[in-house]
Image 1 (cartoon, rainbow over the protein chains, first blue to last red):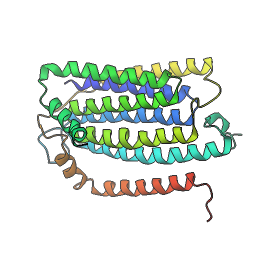
Image 2 (cartoon, each protein chain N blue to C red):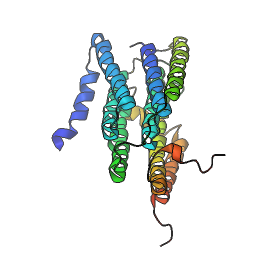
Image 3 (spheres, rainbow over the protein chains, first blue to last red):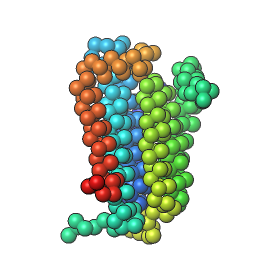
Length: 108
Length: 185
């Protein structure tokens, strides 16, 4: 199938993720928006990679670099979620809320 | 349990056997589902329901990966995202007993500004996507299978693969340190 439609879908999903991050104030909602954005990026990577020539000699056409990069994004997203939720727990212990507007100690 | 475990391979086999004429239909269904669930995540009031719709969103994107042919990524997406990260998120929601996260909703100005920014982003990205010209369409049926990805991961990308495992360990230790109540004792 045409990779263009996947790219348009990924653009729409990325914008929806951006909207979640921008409009929500709860830390967990922002993390969920970031997951949506990372997924949209992965979708674009995989869709484009299928219709590009392979850089390595393995494989009869179709770059394998897209899925590999998406795999790394997934692994880093897992680490990000673990650290992010740890920060949410620490924030909740201090403020009794996960509202990110309350964390303004470093704001001048 | 064995019945449940065989659902994934069955779905993958079904998608692999799909005739080319049916691909746009499946793409439309999965794309609509992913956009609709992302909208629920954006708009719904209840945090638990939003997290559950995020699971559906991630699984529909996994279906899109499988439709493209990246079967390994589709399986990993379901296992890592829907299986591990979402469990972690729901666990924290339950632990902190969060129904509504913040007392005040977003202001009207912030909603309007975010809408403008998101619209501009869509226009910019779609214009960039129109410039993309595919140079080689893969006919390799094994393109996104475990064997191909493993050849790349344990071949030319072995060093980044090891670095990612270090990042995961660092993230794990960091999460434990952040979530621990008292560091001494």
